[in-house]
Amino acid sequence: MTCSVDVVKHTIFPATVEYENMSNMAGNPRDCPEIVTKVPSPQKERYKSIQKLYIESFGTEPAFFARAPGRVNIIGEHIDYCGYSVLPMAIQQDIVIAAGPNADKKLDFKNTNPEYKDFTSSTEDYKIDPSNPLWHNYILCGFRGIVEAESVSTPSGMNLMVDGIVPRSAGLSSSSALVCCSSLVTMHANGLEIPKRKLADICMRCERYIGTQGGGMDQSICFLAETGTAKWIQFNPIQATSVSIPPGVSFVISNSCVELQKAATSHFNIRVVECRLATQVLAKAKGLDWKQLKVLAKLQEALGVSSEDMLSIVEDVLHPEPYSKREVCDILGVSEEELNKDSLSQNTLEVISFKLHDRAKHVFGEANRVLKFKEICDQGPADAATLLGALMSDSHTSCRDLYQCSCEPLDQLVELCRNSGALGSRLTGAGWGGCAVSMVPSESVDDFISKVHAGYYAADPKLQGRVKESLFATEPGNGANIIQLDTETSL
Ligand code: GLA
Image (tube, rainbow, N blue to C red; front, side):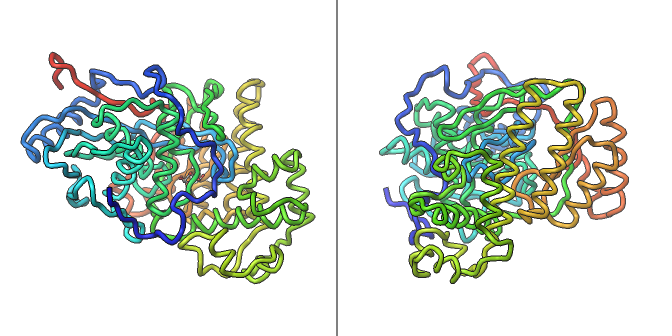
């Protein structure tokens, strides 16, 4: 198979995140995504219209549907790619793909939203273009991930009609949901059965074909989510544990409507690189083989100390002022070329200064907050909701001040949420725009929503038509699955 990717100078699956490779994991149907034969009633009309468009476009009925949810991260931001655990839940908004075979060995992708242009290529020769991350590239990532991971020699051609209702560039993981849904479709279309954890692993890796060096949170929750529960996701290897949020609280999502597409900018990868350099500079100072260490969690493991100890080490070793590239090279004793090759990513080669102290401080602090959050949920003290809310708000402060991944409108929205009755509120997802997630006493959700509506959305005519999709309460939803309608079941 000849498949070309633009960025080939750098390893596409960089050793940034040292996840245990799960490629040998055997397929046990029990662990594979569920195959259901019915569409839940409230979704029927949506599926019918996707089916109708599919038939109009391809002239036959789809063979099956696949769906993959977006997610909201409750706490644990920008630490998955450092090897630390996170605490997200799936949301109801999802990507649905109607799929069928294509006899010409073609990949034919269409979208129910006419804004997204049709895409066609052969299954043998296609191009994933990180410099122009259009929607179909994410579908190609999922396709390529499965074909490569499972060594599919003659992949089935596929006609796809894609329908997405996860708000885009909003921090709710619409891109990963696309990748995961595409991988699921490719798996099923090629008669494969792959366990969910392995699918998550494949998708985490193959999404990097688009150039973003994300961690595995989005893909893991997409496959491992279960209705009614948030999940504590650990890596090395990927594991998901149910977390009981105390009764009487709800999560409300509010979109700042400031969009950032993480694959189209270098903000995200700069943070990944800063964390990697912080790991290496700290490792060098501690006399460790720094070249072997790429993520902060592995450094902590090598030092055998707690996250609190790591915070003191950060204060002792790193200065708060930004490090120039030259300074990092001098500390590590490498040339700029070596640093470029071993530690930077394609879109961070031109960056000349790195904030190591603040980024590392955020990561260790946030990793700790996740553990505390989980502990409080497990123990359920009387004031659990207040304590959890405070952790969420501290997380936002750290994202805003140390990790600098917020923006003014989002900070204002978080502030408004706190003043409107939230127990805690924070940005969720990659940041630099997108959504806030707030923990709100369930009995005051309506009041909260109307206050946030008045304070953020009503004031801005540009946001008027977007309120329904931008401000809503959400419940933990189910993970990705296949819908294979049996002959007797129609939509
Ligand atoms: C994006 C990435 C995730 C994670 C978050 C920030 O969603 O895909 O892996 O790093 O940003 O927490």
